[in-house]
Image 1 (cartoon, rainbow over the protein chains, first blue to last red):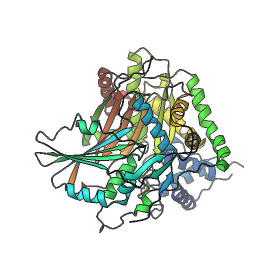
Image 2: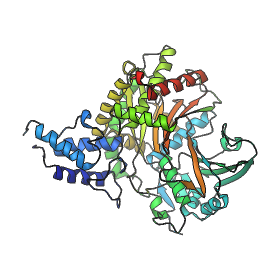
Image 3: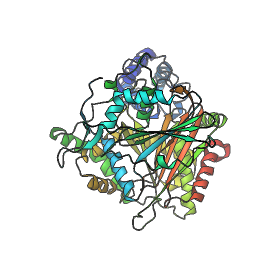
Image 4: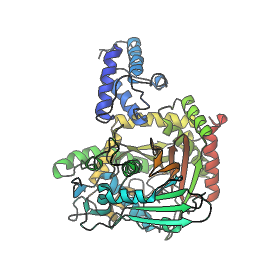
Length: 91
Length: 444
C-alpha cells in the first residue's frame, strides 16, 4: 500500500471515520474542531491510530501523539502526511 | 406524553450489573447501589425538582421498569409494570453544619433499590441551616451508568422552554444488541477470544484482596474520597502532559492507583500474582445527549505483571500497548459478546459462570474514570452546584473499586473498599501513595 501524503485528503478521511464511529449525528465537527472538545478520549484515539495504520498505511508512534499533533484532525493529518512522506515505500 | 416502549432488551452490561448486585447481597452488602451526593447552594427549589420528577416520562418509565424473564432460558428484558412504584423522594432538615455529609444519612445508606422489584432510583434532600442543601440521588447500577446519571440530571434540570431539550424517545435506546438463534453462532465465535484470554489469565497467579476462606455473612463498604484542589488538579494535568498522557489521563490515574495497590501487596508479602484490572468504557457517541437508560459499556482488561507495577512509566508503557492490542483484536466487542451470550443463564448460575475463568477472583480491583460530571451545568433547580461526589460501592470480589471524577476544575478519587479486603491503615497508605504518584516529581 502506498501511504497517502496529502494532508487535506487525510483530514477528510479522519473526519469521516470520527463521524461514523464516535461523534454523534448533528454535532458540528470538522478538521479544525478541537479534538479535546469533541470528546475524543483514549479509546477513540487508539481507534484513530489503528485506522491510520489499516486504511492510510501509516503507523503513528506513541511519541507523535503529542498535544500539538492532537489539537485537531487537521494537525493530526499534517503529522500523518509527514510520517507517510518519510516512511519507506512498500508495495 | 411520548410513546415509550413497554419493553426493551436488557443490555449485556445491565445483566452484568444485576449479577454483581446478587453477588454483593450474598455477603450482606446493600446491593449494587450507587449514590451521587450533590451539594447545592441557596436558591435550590425542591418543589421544582418534585414537579420535574412528576412530569418526566423518563422518570415514569424508570419507576415502572423491572427485570423480567419471559421464559426460563430466554434472555431477560426490561419491562414496565402497569403500576408505577413511585420514585422515592424524602426531604429532611438538619440543624447542624452543612459539611461534611459523611457518613451518609442512615436512611440513604440503607435504601433498598432492586432491579427485580423496583424502584431503581431514590432522591433524598437534606436542608442545612445555612441555606445549602445536599441532594442524594441513589440508583441501582443495573438501571443506568454514570454518564446516564449525568444525562438524567440534565433532563430533569431543563425547563420546557429551554432550547434543544431532548425528546424522551431519544433518551431510552431501544437498540439493544439482539440475541436470537441466528445471532448465536457468530456471538459464540466473537466471544471465544476474550473467554480464552480470561482462562489463560486465570491459570497464572493473580493478586486478590479477598481473604481465603468461607464467604462472610455481613460485610461493609468503606468510602475514602481523595479531593484535589484546583491547583493540584492543574499540576496533575501538567504531569499527564509530561508523561504524554494528555488524551490518556485515565492511564495516569490507573497507574497511580495500581502503584499504590502494589505497595499494599508488597507489604502483605504477596508479590507473585499479576494484577487484573477491568476498565469500562462508555460507548455512547460524543457531543449529543444519548440514551439515559441502561449500561452502555465495553470493557478492556489489563493484566500487569508485578515487575512493572512499581514504576509509573513502566505501568504506562504496559497500559498503552495492551490497550492498542486489545482494540486491534476487538477484545472489548468479544467481551460484550460473551456477556451477551450468557444472558439467558439464570442469575445464580450466571454469577458462578462469570467467576470461573479466574477461579472466582474476577479481578484485582475495578477502576473507572467517570470523566467530567455535571459538565456544562452550573446550577440545578435554582441552586448553584457546589460539589459533586459519586459513591460507587465495591463489589466483592474484588473488594476494591477506584473511581476518578472531575467536577469543574477539581479532580477527586474514590477508594471504595469492602472491610474484610482492605484495612483502614492500608487505605491510608494507598491515599498517601496515590497523592505522591499523581503530584510529586520524584515518583516517576
